[in-house]
Image (cartoon, rainbow, N blue to C red; front, side, top):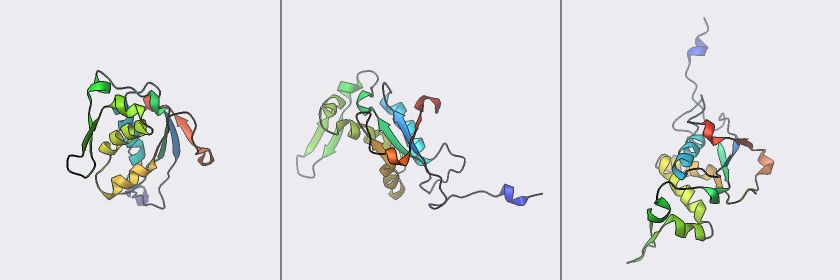
Length: 153
């Protein structure tokens, strides 16, 4: 009997099998899309998942300007930020953020960041997310494969 087949495999940074994937965000609900993307970035869909290691994929989101919110969240949801000065609390709705340059990127990153672990690992994992408002992206050299995000749970 081979006892090595029963050993638990713990992946480290050197042995992690990281891939590049493209996700099309056209007509996707923001929260549902971002929860699946967070699982991809974390590596939860892989059989070699290790909780304390960056073993997930690099995710490229294209057509990010076409994401949708359910209900009245587009106008009623409020994002709060603070400038660091007294009286510097600022509020924005998703409709206001969409008008800004890089606003859709902030919407998606905010949602994914909340679904990743807090601390050093979560901050490092967020660097594996690339959001583009159109279909063009500068990552052709990595040979990313397009996946259908609706196939994941």
